[in-house]
Image (spheres, rainbow, N blue to C red):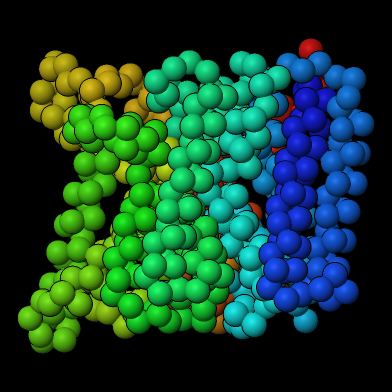
Length: 490
């Protein structure tokens, strides 16, 4: 293990994190807080801890080789997210009264992984600087801390490709040119552009500047943290809901393809099979839920019922987690549609969580091919997605990933149920699903109008780890527990 390069990368991540805390201090000063306030003092303390830790890591890695291989990349990514979660929890612990360690870690993990679940019933009473940190943590976590510094760090060379492809669902081959740093920088510019546009749209739609900035960060990142106690329902504005639907969908589709479309290459949409499947699933799910809502109310479908159905479908499939209604009161079939969408998630190379649409498509086609081969064993049935032929190894990797996700969900649900025996089956199941797939709200006791405050501290820490597992798509965290990973570098 070449630990020196890992120390260097961790120092860069912590410096970036300290800059984010600096923005929170700046936001607090603008919004009326002073440097003598406990909130800003807490952020200044956190900045000192982050910078001090970054200096220590820099010293530890200053003499090592700058070689970055796959295991170092995986290790750096997993450790980065865990370290950022721990450091990012400090402001909550210092500012919020009676805040336990589990609460602080859970809230930070929920932010950085863009899950959007909260452990604080009255988060809307936080100081402005802490509310800003909740939103900013999702915005930073949306595209990924690692992608941010890959975009500006040229010294990594070929190592940048390994870092980017392991942190993001996209790969370097998705770019129109070879340099990963240039491609990641394009993603940064696009991310900034749609965030700024979303902010202006929300301000035009009726939010104040603070609300618009915070909701823009948590919409584009498909995170779902809100400054308001009732999420987007608080505004009672159809215009804001339509704007939110549009920007949530932008956050849930492949960023590289979106960049090509905005550049005028409309054929990219026709060629992107995953986006077409994503839009098809959204359309079909909206029709189903609209029908179920009409059946529940006894009223003919209207503009309001269609908008309500579409909003929740897009919010759940992109794993944003905003709500405009309490869908825990919907008919069981409508809830099952949402449960399915939670597992599916957004497109690869987006800020959305879940299994990802492309993996669902590949798995479905693999099943169809297996059925065909059962009665026609001598026939060759090629598999293609988006115009690309898939090898057997790629298909097996997808199937294994889905099996791992389901296995982790079942094992985690068993552990949570043992730790919290008084909870119902639906609460436990949807809790794990909401955390593993980075959704935010679940059903029953963790529904869209509820929160996660009642869990024990140890359970919250476990759920935090589950969030990070889901955000990094398992392997970057799981490898940390493999003894062979830590063997001496040679």
